[in-house]
Length: 217
Ligand code: AMP
Image (cartoon, rainbow, N blue to C red; front, side, top):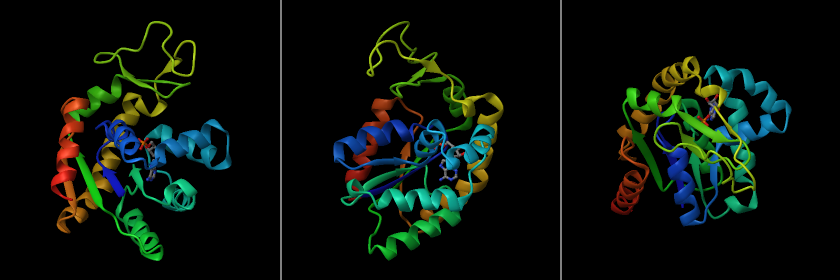
């Protein structure tokens, strides 16, 4: 199974991708997570991307195209994958098409999660993440534990992603509309888009997602 998840920042793509990828036993490939990991390890790629990520800008296409190509070459990606956060613009879409045809592969589904901007700002502004285990919380809807509870042992280390600061959120939404919007329209015009309402609860979106995939299979 080869899937692409598209949608604005904060719509819950990552959360849904994690669950579905586990269920389908395919790797969840998030370019944002790969970049954050590279930054955490202090690699040249991570450090070069930091400024752009913190500001809510996209990192250069060539960087993410290479990251994805390398990730596809890993053994666990042979039976499929779920791409989250890539492609993010028309050029990355074309690069993915090129890579797939060179590998003689096709996409099974392109899922688009939609949600209005006011709700996205509310979700992103309140998002908190554990540095150790990666669990995501929300100060209002799913408050982080006061103590303990980290699946990596001890207490969760809660922090706010630097690109969840207010200025960066607005920039990311702007970039999403100008860069990813045309890609969404492109897939829609090809009749390849599976649309899911991302404004509902995590469980409701999960149910809708599975039903939509079932219908379009
Ligand atoms: P995400 O975790 O998907 O919200 O991505 C976090 C940040 O990583 C984005 O705001 C970009 O700076 C960068 N990033 C992730 N994926 C891409 C991509 N496909 N193209 C360019 N930049 C990306």
